[in-house]
Length: 234
Image 1 (cartoon, helix red, strand yellow):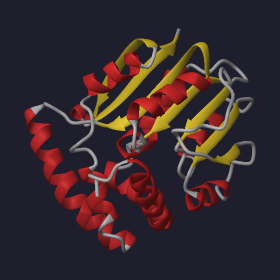
Image 2 (cartoon, rainbow, N blue to C red):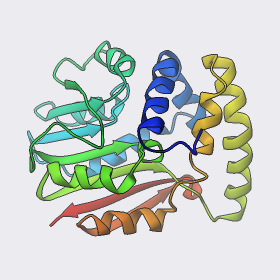
Image 3 (cartoon, rainbow, N blue to C red):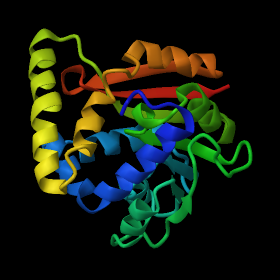
Image 4 (cartoon, one colour):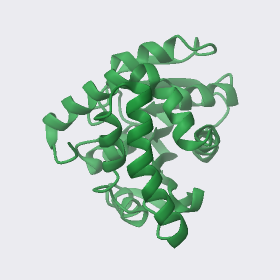
């Protein structure tokens, strides 16, 4: 289903995440060997949110990044936005999320004024949007000048050993395990294959620059299979 475009893709992705929401957190832990929590901490640290600052977690899902930001600074004003209501309901039920503001929103049309946030983070979202440039432009728009946009995403690695192991695991084992646990094998076939058409890390960095983010850089994790991109709104 990665060939779907525009509204058709958005409708498919929203329905898919709604179906897998009850097992989403469990599958994240299993797929990453529990490392996803550490990646989210790194993403929040990269945001360099000022004390008591305002942070937007785009495509928050069940709110793990938003929750991490709130734990890092209890005075932070954190907003978790997602267009899948089933995910948001599960996030709201987690302990410690009482101070997070939740909103149902499309990443391509964020319902916030320009210059609203001290940092904007997305985690594992970019592979699923219909228009990457538009999503990045929206994140830049709502970020305050001089502040950061952070993107945490799966990435294609060129490290030979990791490349072969990752392909076997991500394209073969993940759909099998995900299908068994979630009861939705189609979703866990889509999620790995969404990486096939996704940008390489340097290409995503270039997209960030093209929408007006400056000082763009990225760091690779897990042998290059995960990347954290950071850009600053000039």
